[in-house]
Amino acid sequence: MPSITMELVKMSREKKAQLVKEVTEATARATGLAPQSIFVFIKENEPENVGVGGVLLSDLKK
Image (cartoon, rainbow, N blue to C red; front, side):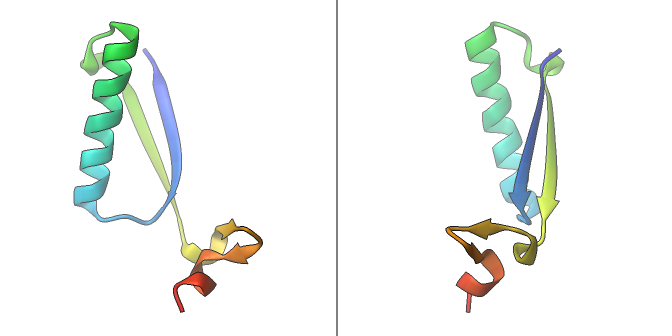
């Protein structure tokens, strides 16, 4: 049973559902495993807890 964990900035439920669907489908194709055996975990982070290029994401949105 593959387990995939992703850490992301907060997303809408719709975007998370689409991401889980596409990651599951791609993993199933690549491994030959049934989609029902693939677990996807999403860990959400606040923009002020994520930095890119030395800048907090919360500062980039201003």
